[in-house]
Amino acid sequence: GSFADVLSGEVGKTMHQPQRKHEFQRRARQMHNRRLPDPSRALLWMRQAGVLTAALPESEKWGIDAIHGLTKAERDLGWTADPMLRLEAIVPPDAARMKTLAERLRLSTAESDRLRHWALATAVESKTTEGELAKRLYRGDRQGFVDRLRLSLAAARVRAVEDNSAMLEAVGFSRLLAFALKWEKPMFPLKGADLTALGATPGPKLGEILKNLEAEWIEAGFAPDRGALLDRAAKALET
Image 1 (cartoon, rainbow, N blue to C red):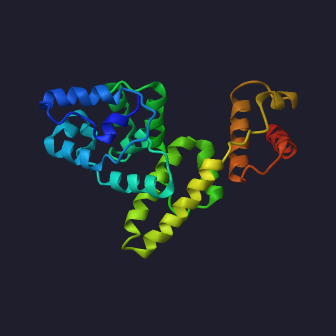
Image 2 (image 1 turned 90 degrees about the horizontal axis):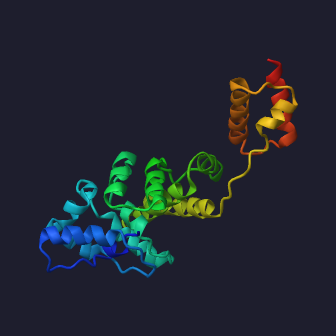
């Protein structure tokens, strides 16, 4: 389920701490499709009361400050409040720890995968070109990069209040986020059958040639067409 109740702070404040912990985890597993209020004050209370660390220990040394910028971005930019993105804002991008968290809170496979992809997605600099981002999107997971970019944009907007350079970063992240959201993964034009038709014998060498051709295609910005790749394949088979 989603983290709607958890990250909206709707956990009974009159419960004893062990009860609060179980309620926190129970509600974390429930799915809700309603708009979420700002959870900042509730999370602060949970942190001060000790229940947040008890139920979500991954947040202890990472902090919850990023949630403020994220909820502001939701309001200002018209983003739909996303419980999973809010969770990512208060835990470290550590794939191993996210796997443990997902198992403990019994997240769905889709939610577990989303946390893992977000954790594995490398940080994107605001000056990154769309062409470079496209290569990373192809090799990785688009949702993971979208989550990274949303959090980076939200954080840059907070810093931009007092830092002009952060304003430029926010513009860059906004540009990259828009690109990632509309990006569609291109289809590599060749398959193993294309190489066997050229006389290649099925086996490790065929796979290696195909992998190298795909890498060249990616680095060339996905520009080489099928004909050009077949020419490259034929030359590779001659060596």
